[in-house]
Length: 526
Image (cartoon, rainbow, N blue to C red; front, side, top):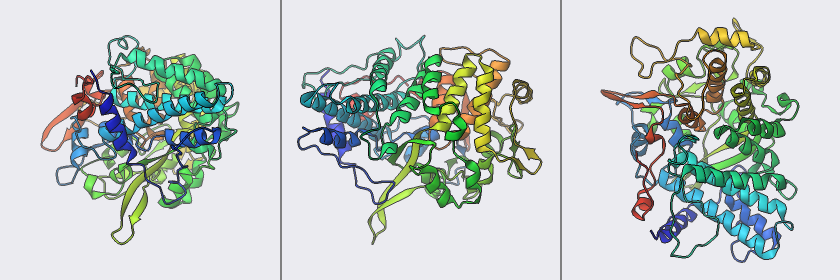
């Protein structure tokens, strides 16, 4: 199975996508490929180790955050195929083809940097650069795993397909790539993370929020260990990020209440924001698809989902907009009821032709934040039944995201009793909502490779998953949570039978690009 040439073709195609941006959010450090023979050149090379394509669009359109607004609205071919869980053969920025190319291109950059470092010294000479290359390789491979593989399940990891994990910058044309198992893939990711963490340093980084600084690296390690059910390490690494008083590192959402959408977006992603740990810039139509564009309006986060499942849904902090302390609920915008959104994923457009007003659509977002890391730790505590510490984190999130009062609603302080009372009073959302049923925030859970006790533990997890859904809206992480908790739901279709996504659904592993399959790499059994 000689597919190395195909890998190189795909990676070369991706390299052509790297464009220079036109504003502060889109600026990239130069990538010196001529002769990397100094520490400074390796550092510049590592600026190219970060992805410029992300699965936000792919995952949001696959998740329960969107539904069908009706055939009177338009959808792009790729959006329609993703929503229906069909293979997506398109090659635009948000499609599997571009994601595969970009992430593997970045893995190749990491391997090149590691080889260059070995040529000019050893691991003791440039420990921080080694660490950045290793953690970037792990992150790019982790993103590939979340897209193209099943969720990690220790009971099935040695059966589920993994992905090739290149460790050299160039391989012989006789190299035979095999996918291996998911267990092997995650072991390789874990190896790189653990090797990198002790060496991570911000000391040489001129723009640390655009690199795996120490906090970002530990936030990634915390998320990864939560995914593999290693709760003690998830807590340890999250605590390394959050410190003794996490409230000091969270975003002040109350400051957003008087801001315009553009001002809010700029404030949300600015590098000086303490809560932002790693900022990613990506070529993507995710913002226009989730917010304003009529070209994507058929499938969206509409008022029905908003009112019953997300920002306006009844929760301990209130409901709707007039009796709700949740700041999100006071900053919801819409281009009719088909698209309702919190403006954290506004588009940054790079104009390349001012006459014809053409260029590239970008999204800018924190790939890691203290808020999401806080919820990682809260979930890990809940899985260990350490409810007191889980409550500390959940209440810290509420204090950050909710104002003291609004209408009849008051900002709550959650207790074990109040969580049980609230969640026990919410019925489970039906997999296929009908005219006589209503969507809710509470889902039937079918955890993949772990168990949850009914009662208090499930109630805590349900609340944390709802918080995570709000926190990561627009970022795609909801689909990752759906896969690992086996949440079943339907993508309704106007005039057609719904498409139902089931627990352990093989369609959760997105199909590999056709060129890669044709070159000999095993396809996903969707």
